Image (cartoon, rainbow, N blue to C red; front, side, top):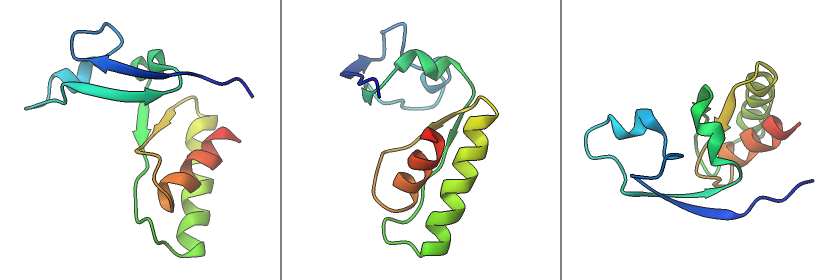
Length: 92
């Protein structure tokens, strides 16, 4: 497994997501882990409850695995529960 550094992206950074700049009041900074150049690819955020059912975690895992298999990037805040299950599925 290749490890990627943490990175801070300010809104003027060329790797800052272009579409995020277009929303009202975009974040001034983004804290990232991984490859911020992937923000230029189609992304899907999978977010949900931190305390979720096994069924919910299983569905998030499977959904994210299928999304990633289509070449899309799965993004979230990396929280426990649904978010974590989605990221494990995407990594498969």
